[in-house]
Image (cartoon, rainbow, N blue to C red; front, side):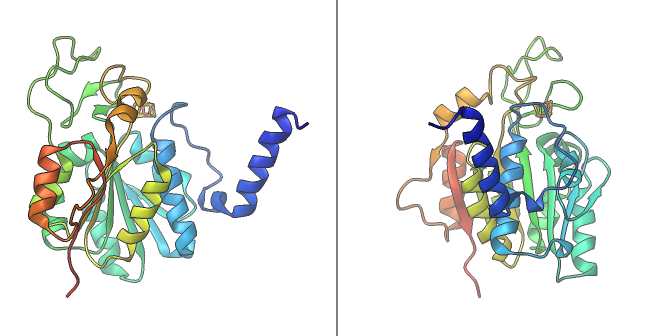
Length: 267
Ligand code: SF4
């Protein structure tokens, strides 16, 4: 009978042989243990690996925040830019060399707060980049303030009276702005993230990936793993991803349906 130690060693060996870790850099992630960003990291890496994109042809661009550290942990070119500015920098990278696969990454504070003015323009111009919004509805790096996607009444140490203002719906925003590929995904499902990314990377145009994640350190009530696992579900059977109107209704009426919600027809 195998001991638990040998089972783990065997699993690690199989992962190493699969090449799945080859996209990771030598810098180990500094995120808190249990952070949802590990699942997103795995999903992105698996997509790059499966598509066999040469690492020197990939650029990851981030803003500021816990998600902003991502380029350090991946074995591609990378830019850690200013707060909220991943999209304009990623646009510039793609313009300078259209052959590159370009990812812009950032959290909900970075992308929907200070950087919120860039999303409509990248989407409406249909820039051929892949924007991954790591949405845990909290500012983790600065220790737990409500973010633009926090629900009304969200209490943290920094908001003891509860947050005010209705949350922004990133998926609905991207659809409204004209994004030509939109997926809503869950950090607890790296396979789903990887599958959607592979389609989005192949799509010629602006691809938006809204990934629900969990900040295990500062959020004990809203996007916890326990809550998310109970709430997320697949898009309904019969959902037509070629209909923007249908996608907008779906995004408006069901916050937790996951999958490729919109894909503009080619041509
Ligand atoms: S503070 Fe929250 S978002 Fe940041 S690394 Fe820790 S768990 Fe993740």
